[in-house]
Length: 173
Image (cartoon, rainbow, N blue to C red; front, side, top):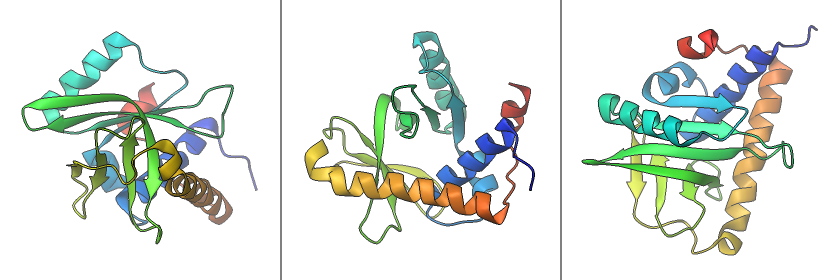
């Protein structure tokens, strides 16, 4: 078995994220068409955040960016730029949180005061006014469950030899 390229690992990671947030396998391409998913080595700077906001206003597609730090490479840091009526939310720090049955995973802003974001069956991102927990401590079990599930999905894909296509823009990067 040959070692997957870095680009293939990134594409498969996107597949695991799409499965986790979309709630089902096999929707990677549809997820990528409806969500701008960005994997990056760094946290976006202010100009990039403004560009993401402009993109969301123009397309209505939310932007989710994921990056990893050297201090904790196994835990992805997640940001979200999402449409909200006439406004656009820019949230630099979100966490994954999964329901006890693992069927639904939400993006929760780390202050737990802005509610949560969840994809529906049509992969539309919806803002929920209430977070699934009142604090990081109260939400810890659901957070750990979500990150473990993401790792499990990624490992299962690698074991099966799944191959996901990178979005067109990612290929050029």
